[in-house]
Amino acid sequence: EAGVAQSPRYKIIEKRQSVAFWCNPISGHATLYWYQQILGQGPKLLIQFQNNGVVDDSQLPKDRFSAERLKGVDSTLKIQPAKLEDSAVYLCASSLVRGRGNTIYFGEGSWLTVV
Amino acid sequence: KQEVTQIPAALSVPEGENLVLNCSFTDSAIYNLQWFRQDPGKGLTSLLLIQSSQREQTSGRLNASLDKSSGRSTLYIAASQPGDSATYLCAVRDGAQKLVFGQGTRLTINP
Image (tube, rainbow over all chains, first blue to last red; front, side, top):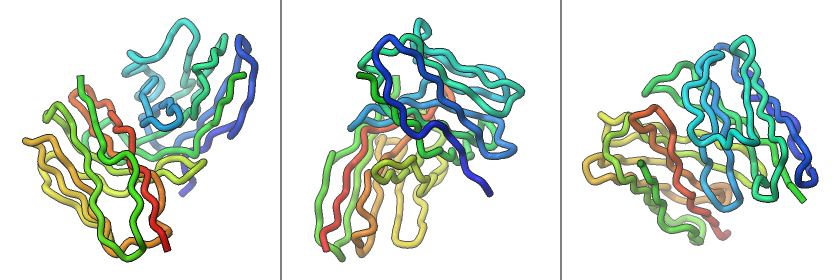
């Protein structure tokens, strides 16, 4: 079974530029998550989708971050304009359904450095 | 607001020792608790998931316990090996179905 796929793996941009990350969840997984992990910290949820609807985006900085999940499968996370403090790993994850018993599976992450 | 704390932040032990990693959470109204492993430059790998109604889960040399009333979980690693070196994260699924993470414990097993 293929895992959660993310691209690009690494990106270096200048502040005020834009960047987009792509995620392909495990086939059949209805729930998709984007997490931000700053070095030395635990991941923080940015946005959670159930199929193509947003369940939770309370911690998404909406003035610069946006995310979409078209057709309930792939998802894109965009940052525009980027700030230095956005340097982090962006982790995509998926689970079978939004439920208490389901394991969440993570991709390997997209590493962003803003200079 | 749910907060998850992991102690210690870093731990270094000789190979072969048994060890315990600690996780505490402030709100006992959780659905489940999950332990993850993260290797440098990699994503998170799920190790064990404990439902709120369970007390422990075991997988090989790993044993995770959950005491929901006191807001604590432990991850016990038996007979540690250098390959166990990684960062270990615990996360709780709260009432809003959100997964809240601790900051992790960086474990180093010395040969």
